[in-house]
Image 1 (tube, one colour):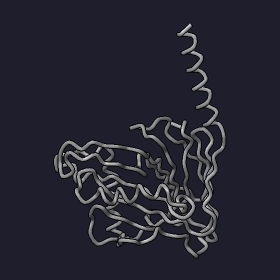
Image 2 (cartoon, one colour):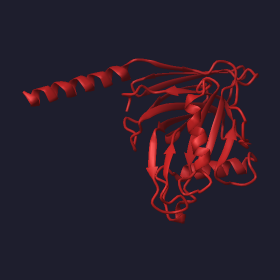
Image 3 (tube, one colour):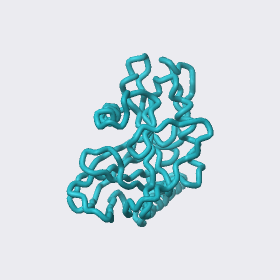
Image 4 (tube, rainbow, N blue to C red):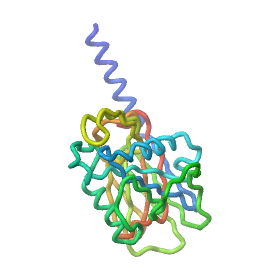
Length: 247
């Protein structure tokens, strides 16, 4: 009897998960530019926790997803200090260095903020970014299962448009056992767990999201932005929460 109940419960949970993933989830930016906020951070950097904490506070801001989309890129160039960042990836460090090569920042450092592809200094009491006034075009996406269909309607066609898709993880509590943040427990949100780029000549895409994401998070979000060619400055951004049972 107990085994039968467990089997029924497992089938019900699997059915709920499949139902959640079969329903369309829509993301739309609108025509005014939604800001992409990039934070380059590391668990091995002693000055990064305050920036991570501030980023976490944005979960409760009313403009989240509709006015700005934060993304935390964990770099790997501090891993040698005695603690390897569990979220760090070499490509995130390379992206930050590309920001420098493109003239968006003079020096690579952490914590480093970029707002719409330009270096941004967070000051005490400074409010979160609001919608831009320019007509940036509408970026819209539909997620069904793990298939993401994206279309970017802009006034000026782009010969080569680059779509960025990032899966964000929330609710991490990471005990640090060595390095500059030794004996601290770091609270981390908006952590970029998966990032992919996709080129298009007609500003439409069909992308397959990963079926599984590791490490597991308490909650997940999706960040979507479009840029021109290899230029890191985003033209338009959108995003939102994924259903609780998605992963």
